[in-house]
Image 1 (cartoon, rainbow, N blue to C red):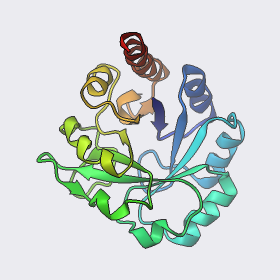
Image 2 (cartoon, rainbow, N blue to C red):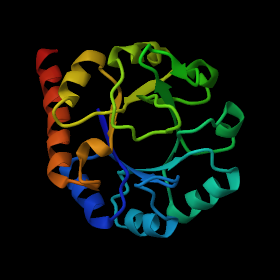
Image 3 (tube, rainbow, N blue to C red):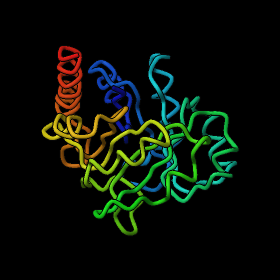
Image 4 (spheres, rainbow, N blue to C red):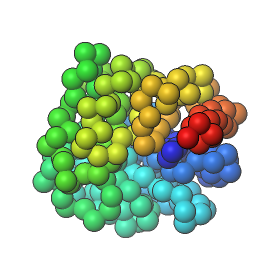
Length: 211
């Protein structure tokens, strides 16, 4: 079970998250309260183990902007949260995570079927008008079953230490992504990060026991 902690903005939090068992860290390069500059992200990434995925999060950024940040920061994965189409995704060699927003009625924006064979991993997040991500709200988790036929699915949107175990039990995703759910007053809370990861690993261990 891949665990991604998104919205990392400082080296201390990044290192503590890794020590807590995170597999991937997300760096937001789009306008957001969690936005980080390429310069800061580079410094953080240089301090991380090679085994940790370093994911750059972009919203409708140009090809040149993304490529420059990839080269500068040594990102390992790209996460697109806007209206990036198939043609745009085809321009990169790095693995891509395409965000799919899920409405309360279970509609997908955009349609993941358009990216079949191009994108191998999708991030299911909550749809909110005029907001590209980081809503802190959940959606009907079971709806991601319809996305799984197109690729691996990372569950996001409103996950917290107190509900991630339930979410995993319902949908069995490939991974989970959390940002605001492990924050206190807008800043990452290492105790919440630890608890979140502990809950994920507890669920994982119980699955292995019952097999």
